[in-house]
Image 1 (cartoon, rainbow, N blue to C red):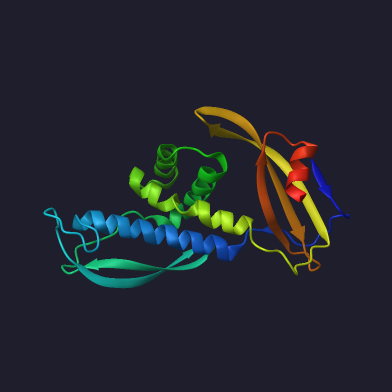
Image 2: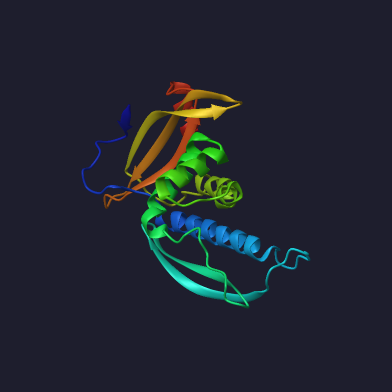
Length: 212
């Protein structure tokens, strides 16, 4: 079902918030690099360990061009110069699949193990369960901040509301859940997704909760 407060203009197309996606990807990739470097050294920062295999020696910067913008990464270095990060060696080919996998992880609530399998199959990159966890563990807070951001002072002459159903795992069971979305269309035709909510069905009560 698609509804609008007024007739929907043809100009413009829906676009995801680029700054949000770029920041999220930068933080996830940086955290994964740090986790891989800690495993390479055999110890975390300031950690005493008999398994330590080297020492830290600062960072070097690398710019990565992705579909959500240019991301600057700080690549950890060891004193001997032996550390070569492996997780993102083929990132230029696989980052689109990785973004889609992260989105699936949070929309569908699938397990970390399933995300790991999907990343390996689609990206051709071997990742550990801990690396997947590092990539996604802080997304919840950032997505919640986006969902609860203030829209005060913004004008959207048109709203488009729609819903579709996704399979979601809850309490060990896979059930069909409605995903309710609202898109605001500005006077210049630019479309912005204003929010996404889940509910048991696409019912009047669900939409009342969205617009309350």
